[in-house]
Length: 320
Ligand SMILES: Nc1nc2c(ncn2[C@@H]2O[C@H](COP(=O)(O)OP(=O)(O)OP(=O)(O)O)[C@@H](O)[C@H]2O)c(=O)[nH]1
Ligand SMILES: [Mg+2]
Image (cartoon, rainbow, N blue to C red; front, side, top):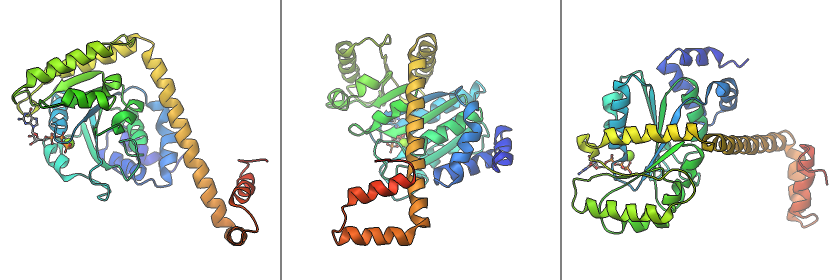
């Protein structure tokens, strides 16, 4: 039993304030985060997690806003986590996304949060995984993760999202960029947004050619779709492609394999976190003895490796 249980109970009943508080505890990396995950983990596993990745300004937030609107019409509960790697120092919300999503601000069926990456390499904030588990556990049917894809960073989205949508816009060299970033290997849906701009058809053709060339044994050929997110054009097709892909995963072995790999990532991450916390606690408790050893290393009476191993042995992490 965790003393977060009353809060968790209320969040499960649909209380947005309670959910917001739990999300904050997790996002701030407070000690309670682990307790919360332990309490709710078994309830998760029902949400369809969708990654929306693409270059800055491609229209990702506008698209998500439109998709959320559609989901709400069907009565589905939705959550949006937007990751903003461009402002690592803001440590919190991205104003622009808030404004664009304002339409849903008072809707209790929509949970929206912006996360800063806080320097964690890999395109997603470290709290993205536990937050996804929380949002899943309290009954969101769909969870959108919006991330800017520059270079390889978005690849980590694959650990969290069942369905990865790569958004691009008409213009020179888009297709080539997508190839470079290894996007085609992980994208499940390719979307040319801003199809109202010139040369959208060329971009579509480029991508279609590349999809054909990259065809592997995934059992799923990524469709190349077009949209004008700002005019709500093409979003019905995106929505039905999302559903098709999820159904494909459910009907194949891929979901099982995917669950195993995310479970492994979660356990590894939890181990890393626990080991780190154990080390910090130990050094805090035995500060004087540790300072003494550090002194020896600085005087070259001992080497850092030997000293580190001796300290890890106290935690049972090394026995040699
Ligand atoms: N012409 C046109 N403009 C669009 C379309 N979709 C979005 N926009 C505009 O493009 C701009 C950027 O849209 P956002 O939704 O903020 O793009 P984003 O990819 O979320 O941007 P970042 O989060 O900053 O990476 C806004 O001014 C939108 O109104 C579209 O289909 N056509
Ligand atoms: Mg955005």
